[in-house]
Image 1 (cartoon, rainbow, N blue to C red):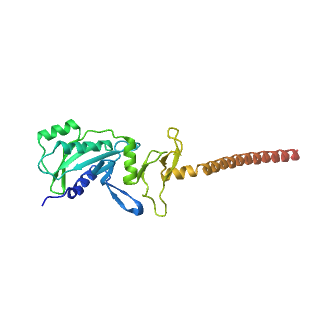
Image 2: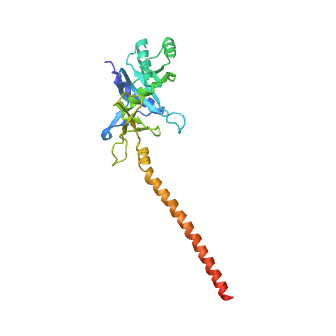
Image 3: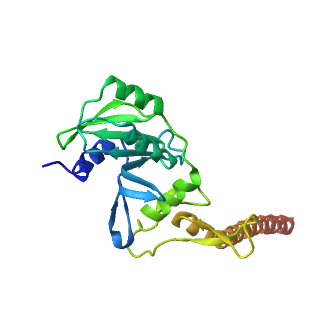
Amino acid sequence: MAIPEWAYYPAVQSYLRRLGYVCESKGSGGKVIPFIMKGSGQIILDVFGIRTPGSPFSSELEVAAVEVKRSTSRASLRYMHQALNSSKIAHKCYLAMPRKYTDKDLKMAAELGIGLLTIRGRNQVRLESESRRFDPNESSLLEFLRRNLAIAKCGICGNFASLFDLPEGHHREGGGWRTNAFLRKGKKKWVYFCRQCRERFENVWPERRMLAAERKLQALAAHQHRLRKQLHDLRSTIRRRRKK
């Protein structure tokens, strides 16, 4: 009996996790959203992972998409183009199959820029050739993250956050519809604001008032100190004159 494609998904996910990719997010009610069989338009990603490579001060994302095929006969050009199609929303694209690749397969994959993964049994995945880094459309990627994974990019700080991964007692944080000068009249753009930015900007005016009041109190305390010193000097002068 042939092994179905979905039976290889856990092994591919484990491989991506070992490379530092996140392979799930949180949905409504704390439900786990596995990064399996999600798509946007005509693009369906069999298995994928997301990580933030490079500097910890960067909000850059890297999406790795894996096209999984169960065939053990050959790596057809059609399979490779299906893997390449993921480059519209993924930075790295791979084809994974339970077979050994020929030199022709490796050459064809290199020409297309995709990577090749070999699946051994149901639990082992080995990298045969690396994918080049693609440049997916940012708008398509953001829409994919928002609609499929409940993950959005904050319009203020640029950080990515799960809409439902919140402390207990907090409600889902959203954004708001904003007017855009380049949209037709009556149309608006949705902008997301993460919880930290919302808290920060909602409290910015009270904080400013508190800081202004604190500065005024400090100024009054300094003025009071000067008055006390002047009063002390005046009393000392009066006592000296009385002694004379």
